[in-house]
Image (cartoon, rainbow over all chains, first blue to last red; front, side):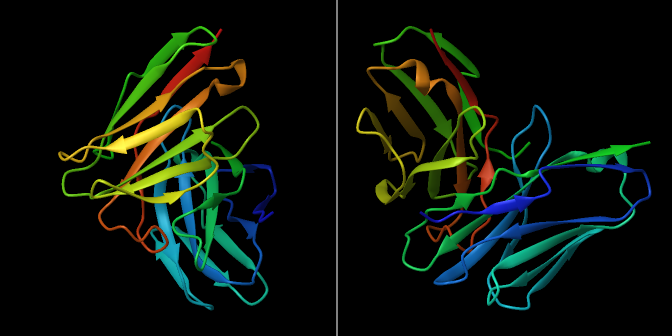
Length: 113
Length: 115
């Protein structure tokens, strides 16, 4: 059974702190990794789609890196703001799985003003 | 607002019943995906349609079925409902059929409660 692990499960930081969390996935047959941001009472919103080993993507204060050989991705948030409070989900897909995105349970981030 | 719409927002029904959830993708998107999120579970992929044809199947029960119509809207049919089917059901859409490399745009979800 293919599994995606995200850590930590939850995180509480102060406004202005920088933070990062991890997504671990099986490295064999890797095809792509997605990061989503999910605010309470809203729907998941795509942040990044990453496919290549060594990929680094950035959107504002949020960035992500990918290591497909060792099976992990890091999401970084620089200078956290209260509006960054959300659950951050990663999902990966293996080659040949025909669209089956496997999601982790997410890291819930709370940023205190 | 992602541009994906789902109806109804909430649905309360009884065990043994059948319900239909509806999804309209973003304008121009050809792919529709259905996901289920139960309590304490991550998002579970159910099924994908691309331009009217089934493209990929995940952990979808035999009691569940879906279709995508010529106007590209999709319906998820859940029958012989059980208590364990209570969940948040999301629809997502993407422009192309290749789920791996296309970001998906999620609708607001339908909260199904089976009593």
